[in-house]
Length: 92
View (tube, rainbow, N blue to C red):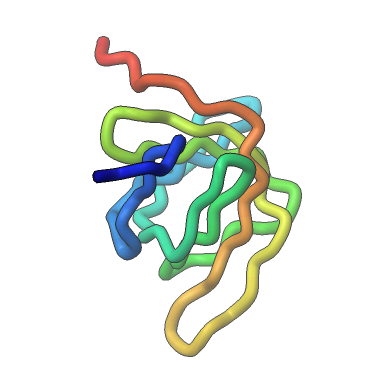
């Protein structure tokens, strides 16, 4: 029987990152390395600068936050994201 209070996400799930700002920014494909209630570690083929506000779509949820770490790892980039809010994805 599952005793955890929070839903756990499987690693390597595909996510879509949207760079936020004055205009909607580019969409970036990434995968989940690690996730918690307050943050995520993602792997991306392109860098996202520290301080960049982003949204992350995973399954039926959207999280918003900002990148606080972007480190080159072999042929990809590892992004540390501080999550500020998570909500159900709205389907328009």
